[in-house]
Amino acid sequence: MALIEAKSICKSFGDLAVLKNVSLSVGQGEVVCIIGPSGAGKSTFLRTLNHLESITSGQIVIDGQLLDDRADGVNRSPLSKKEESAILLEMGMVFQRFNIFPHKTVLENVMLAPLHVRKMSKEDARARAEDLIGRVGLTDKLGVYPSKLSGGQQQRVAIARALAMEPKIMLFDEPTSALDPELVGEVLAVIKKLASVGMTMLIVTHEIGFARDVADKVVFMYDGTILEEGAPQDIFSNPQNERTRTFLQAVL
Image (cartoon, rainbow, N blue to C red):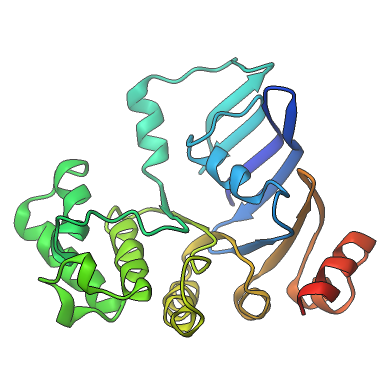
């Protein structure tokens, strides 16, 4: 069953068409990596899925529920705020920049949303937060503030915070692009661990080796369109599109 179905997604900023009829399906437990040059529309596409950007036209279906059905910017199937929120809570997102609260400790950052959005008890929220912080390898940092953490550690806190909401889907928007090279591996290791336990993930990344190792499907975007998608061995070893070949030759 597809947890994400994007159908003919178009997105324009004024006269600039950023997404042009993008369609993609992500199955339950599937890891899909999106690669491509800067300006291809990768991050914009990811942001349309959880309403950080509104689409101009197309359909978005999350876990069988219609989230968007738009034509010329008009939503043909509007949801109530409550219905929309319930669907959006199925998706956790990790950004390029860590977006964690500087005035709260690691534990407080991870507990916050379960307490206030999921309405968990403080005891349950703390237990879940401690478990997730342990899973990302930061048990010794519970009471530490973000300013005392490395970039890689902050990004691992951001991942734990997103997981605390118990999403069915995780979206990653170039999660290592703001990190120093020596810190990239620790974040990718956490994402690989999520893949190994069956988390459904859509990952925009420039880490080609990581995409080769972890993805079930690789998508190549160029100029607002999906030019090619397939298994990693097919995309990386025998790309069919000339643009894909040129891009991979440049980055590999």
